Picture 1 (cartoon, rainbow, N blue to C red):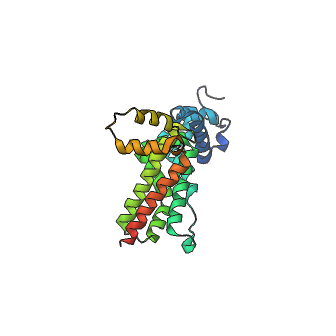
Picture 2: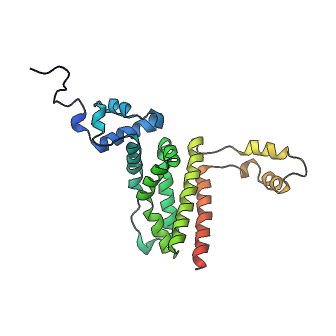
Picture 3: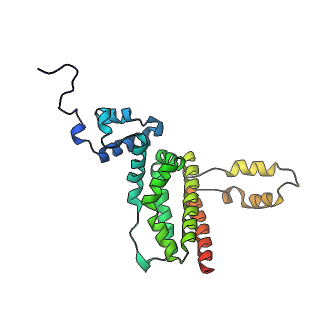
Length: 230
């Protein structure tokens, strides 16, 4: 005789195949499709067709799920060591591009990662080796490596926030900027007016890939100058 109110020993549909990886894969699908706010432990359990309590055997709370998502998305970005076959600055740029691509492939997760210090720490642990390796080969001192890596990551984070908020390949700034600059008083911002007016609509055209590469080259050149001064 089965006691009323007691759960049968038989697992619910889905619980037999439940794993940390399966939970994180389902969580990432929810975040990608609907955003971070849609992700709850109850919703995750419903998606997996399991009892919510069974999730806690693998991940104790939502914070742990988000940390796991950061690991899931970014752990695969660590690049193999090319040794001396590739110049350090190219290694650094490849690391930066890979990190940016990880963020842009999951923009909803990126916004969460960049606003949560614990999530940032989780990402840094699994992604920073290629940055530190390249900067070490540039000949920087340990503190300089730390500061240069932080500057690069801050650049990528800030750039990715802007890119995620627009969610388009280009950013049409030129028409509005030209109109506003031309409306300025004659004695206001003469250098800005001269440069913007000279560039015109075509010269002011902006795409995110080009903007990222330009910023990355500027930062890498600055790091190279620091290395040469040692």
